[in-house]
Amino acid sequence: MDLTTLAAALLLAVGLLGADAVVHSGSVQVSVAPLPKGANLSIDEPSLENEFDEQLNEITTTPSVVNPPEIRSTTDEGLGMAIAEALNVQNVAFALQRQMGFRPDKLRFALFVQDGKMAGLVNGHSHLVGDFQNVVTPEKGEAIIAFVQRCALWSASQLAPYSTSLYLLEQHAADGDFQNVVALAQHSIGLLPNTPTSPDRALFENILGLVALFKNDTKTARHEFDDAMASDPKDPVPFLNAAFTDMQFNDYKEAAARMQKLIRVAPPENKVLLSTAYTTWAAAQMGLKDMKSADRLLAVAYTINPHSSTALALWGEEKKEVGDEKMGAHLNHLAKEEASTFENYAEVATLYFHLAWRDNVPVTRSKFSNPGIVTFH
Image (cartoon, rainbow, N blue to C red):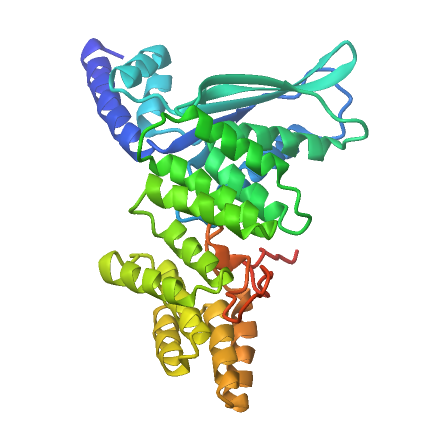
């Protein structure tokens, strides 16, 4: 290759590196090392890489208002880096990326055997916590797949602590063991600057509020939601959850006023959240025995998001309360049919709990949730 062609190729690579920095600015590059030679493991290299990647993807695809980082393998690289590799100037390319202020989050996972025992080495770089490294050892009787998934879970807690917190919250909704959720949320808050407002801090404070609701500790939940609203007055989620706690306190008037103000002053652009706001407002009106207003609000909620099982089921309750058993049964049937579609985001209380529009009702689990992915092979 003559110097003119080489210079042109380098200039093209530099331009493409800049474009790649923009396109993949929120991504994580993941690599899984080959299996150690001579290791007697009941898993092959493709399966190892697939299990690690799949666990990361499952965590970061937890339905959330916040966009998670994109997980991509190092083989899925930008065109600029591919040209740099072809020219054998990868080090120059990395230096140029740093000069442009682009240092992607990276993660590397490797199994190794030392003194006859297997372990996993996880290291990388996160824009949240900087460089990280951890050696993970299998627990007694732990299968290789479960061990690889646990290594991926720890990795995700470094790269995407918020997505990981939501994932753990959903995973332990049934058994109520939220120790790891609380630890990760509190640790993440501790890493943030103690500024009066902080959108990142608000996210984790909201999660701690949800954990309190699972424990039927409405007072603590309300305290956390209040903190989240103060930390980020522009995030509608803690306002929705605060209204939920208003209902638990039998303060239907406050819940209605809170949702009315939210919709009037800063209506959520997301249709699912907007529909949830109208549904919560309707439940508050039901608590106030104003069924006509509730009926009107639920009609609006349904128009905004016709796939909400929560809105349909509550509408069915309202119809039955006014004596329309037939329509109530029909709406309840529709709610069950919609149970196979997306319901709500993992940070919203009404995904997990029923809106308490009757007095002195404890925190009760919702009949609906986000559907799992089922495939038949």
